Image (cartoon, rainbow, N blue to C red; front, side, top):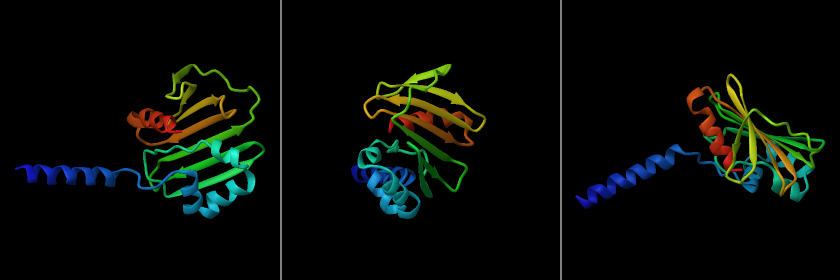
Length: 160
């Protein structure tokens, strides 16, 4: 009976781990996995300290098929997209002027920062200031699942 329980437990663990994102989402892993679309733009335009301050979530609610980065004038945009309708866009603004607006809906993140939330028809946007790195993060999650969208987005935002 104990052997059967152990086998069932191990099967469940393997099944659950197979359902989660299998991509490593660290800066170095993204540079290696997506050298042209992510690595080159990041390395060519950002200093090492800016690369470390990029808003890269360590968890996603889906497995990305493609990750792209684009930088221009103190802003870097990283897009994670899947074959389904799910997509994450993270905009990092370096050395921002104090131009963050107060949103009607707000939430305190695990980091202690307060993020404004704006809900759209198919997406939710979070925006917050990180005083330690002197950056503003804007995080947009597009998903067709209205019921789970906010919860999934909040989990990903908290992983940044």
